[in-house]
Length: 101
Image 1 (tube, rainbow, N blue to C red):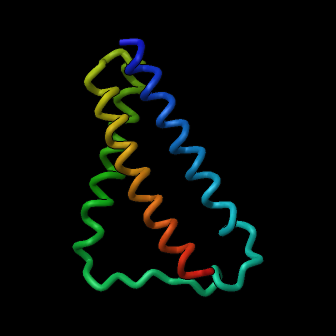
Image 2 (image 1 turned 60 degrees about the vertical axis):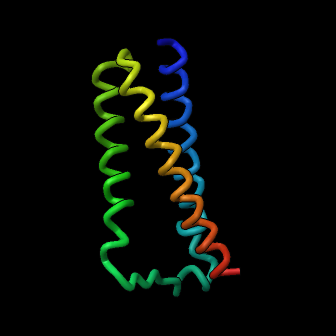
Image 3 (image 1 turned 90 degrees about the horizontal axis):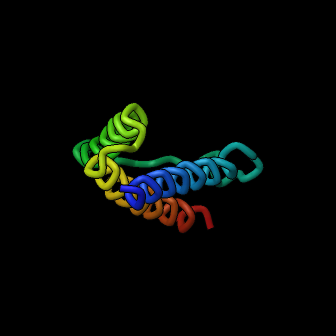
């Protein structure tokens, strides 16, 4: 049980830290390429899976926090969900980086 608590807390902290770090270039406002950058989404159905991931992450994070990371199954679900969400955000970040460089 202790390993799942540590894993869940660590993965969530890493995810939130990377999310915070990724917003720094947008907050600086010095890059003219980022000021004119736009996402073009051809099909709206492509937003369903990321929405489910984000809603699942928030739900699992709230449940684990309320139960104080005592349920092993919820902890591991949170770890898996966060890792998939991390992979998704990293692919988006790489795509944005390729477009602006």
